[in-house]
Length: 356
Ligand code: IPM
Ligand code: MG
Image: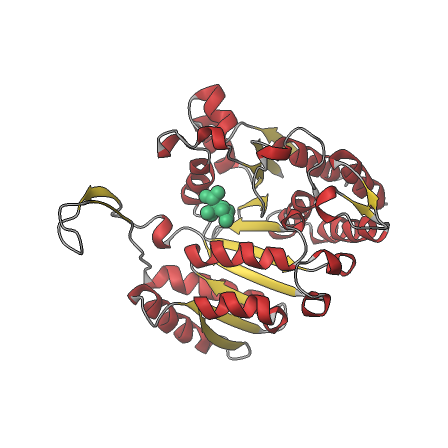
């Protein structure tokens, strides 16, 4: 089992180190190989996704990814910005299926900004299509507007597009995932306005014919954004496009109390995957030893389950995380009165200990 370890920028290094500690404590045989990515890679090699890193990522069974980005790179030409590393990996490896669970742990019910009764027991899975949509659609660029409200003015444009097979395969992923859960899928679109999402809705409806044991409903994205804060527990699996999924998954993360708890997995059709916390590089707290490593540790558990066929080890990690929360250990992002404040490496060590 070869794992490419790409810590990246900001808190990436600290949190990935803890996940690696946990992996190494499992008593399994892994080959772990580190490489630079993001702003760190730009500083050292002149590119956020160097050839060597991409090569390693391609040949590995799974990628454990930290986070990329820092304000200091905002002025760089787009192709050199840290975010291009993650977008480049998604595209180069065909990681089209992004799993973003939003689970509210019992002990963290009060850390949510919503009323505890709205989020207690919350368990949603957002499945975001990750290699299409307006993120990658061509053409895009800047030009002089040939028409529109201000012909002759400077304008910028991106293209939203989806092909039928892209929608079909992500719909199948969502229905299959729902079969392992509460068997309900909400497909989120904007079919009332956008052609792209009328096709989305039509194709999801057709694919559903193969999954009649799963209940399907459709929701416009604006309504979905509202329902997520009004009655989040009504959802089981949400499937949506790249752009809507980006926005809704951040919204959903906050229901759980802290984005510092949420793992994610991005898979291709060979079950090769990139595993990363749902949060970013948090440069403001980098190097201070206060970042929450649990999202990355839980991402390592997803990696064991989805790409490495080690479901039992994944269960062990998830149980250990629940145990440290029950022990009252909290990094500052999830700390509340009456619990014990710990730093990044103490939290990692506690998880290792709780593995038993
Ligand atoms: C995410 C992030 C990325 C995205 C950025 C860093 C390119 O926000 O993974 O949700 O927009 O997909
Ligand atoms: Mg995002």
